[in-house]
Structures are given as C-alpha cells and as structure tokens.
Length: 293
Image (cartoon, rainbow, N blue to C red):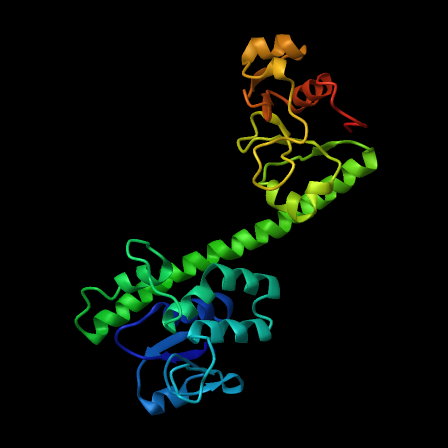
C-alpha cells in the first residue's frame, strides 16, 4: 500500500518541493500527496512535512516553523536526515545531496542565505512555478511540476554519485596495476573522467605520469600527461617538445608510429587510431618506465 503524505496548500518553496521529491525518489514512487492544513487530514497521513507545527522523527512529522524548534533545518533537511537514518540514502550520497542542494535550500528557507538576483538556483527555479497561479488547484498542479523537476535533479545526482563510486574503483584498480607493473603509466580500458578519483586517491604522490585511455566515442585512443596536482595546467612529465602541435602523418613520422592524429601544442595529450598506436608512441617518448601490459 502506498504511503499517504501531506504538506500545506498554496504557495510553495524549495524545501517542501524537495522534501516531496526525496520521498518519491527514495521511499515510495507511488506515494499520494494531499496539500492541506486540515488537522484531521494531517493526522491521518503517514508523513507530514512543512506544516503541522511538529518535528518528530518517530511519527514522521517534519515541520520547522514552530517556536519549539530552534534548529537550522527546513523540511528538506529534516526529511534527508530521516532518509539517511532509515538507510534509504547512504551516508556518502546524503553528503552529496547536502553539499549540492539541501544545505542551501535549508539556509535560504530559514533566512541565513539570500537569493542572488539573476542566478537561477534551485530555489529560484521552484519559485517560478508559483507565478501565474490563481487558485489552489493551480498551485497544486504547479507544485507537482516543480517536484518533477526536483526528481530529475535528484536522479542526476544519484547517477553522478554512482558513477564516482565506479570511477574510483576503476582508478584504484588501475593505479594498483601500475604499481605492480613498476610502471609510470595508468592503463584504462574505457572512458571516464579519471582526474577526480586519481587525485582523491593521492595521485599527487603516485609515481604515475601518464594515462592511456580511449576517447568517449571509442574510435581513438589518447595518451595524457598527468598534471602534478588537481587543476594544474602543468605536467608531471610533458610529452616531447618536438612532437608538440604535429598532426596526422607529421606526428606519425616524428614518433615512428602509424595512425597519429595529433599532439597538443602544450604537450599534454596525443591521440592515435588504436590503443597499440598510443602505447607504442608513448613508449617512443623514452619517458616510460616498467611494463605496459
């Protein structure tokens, strides 16, 4: 049986929209919502947020407007804390949600942060859905449209978090493999944004200097010179200056490897038709240590 949920009617804000988006994303996609201030309807609901004058996790009441509550959370932060405590959201994902949207929504709703004119943040985008509403039915429809936006945002954050977990595991395995080969080259078999997990895993102090990886299309392979630290445009070991800016046959002639596409003039990336070509070209630099397989 689906959950029954209640919140207030009329004008809405980012916190109640986000609370509902989280309930339907992480608890029950088929939950039903009534927007009301009727005490009997509130009492009958399984979950109540942003209305009712009660904050009680045990009975799943999440209001922050009453004098008795002196905390910093809005209904969004209260619901997220409950979801984490219930195991519906992992601690690491909860941290991502707080950092990316929930803490901000809490602060805006409780007056600790002001909206910046011209900046289309989540709170502003939610409020645009209130515009033009003239009846309770108008506001109800607009609330659900705003909540759908919130669900899409949450889905993206969930997928990003999952991808970061996958990428971290893949990078950890690749860095360990490089160590076992005694090599300064990280070998990756698929495309992903490798820099965040590399530096999260203390890549600054790792002995690797290059990454081999296919591009996003899978049609070419690249050898990348690793920056010494996150955000740097420098390289631990630049590619050869003699190859800088060369393309196609010029690059292949310079390095003695067919299938060259280009070497960036700033010596941080070169691209070849095949993995074998990228590996051979990197070996031809004379900068490679250890085995490449």
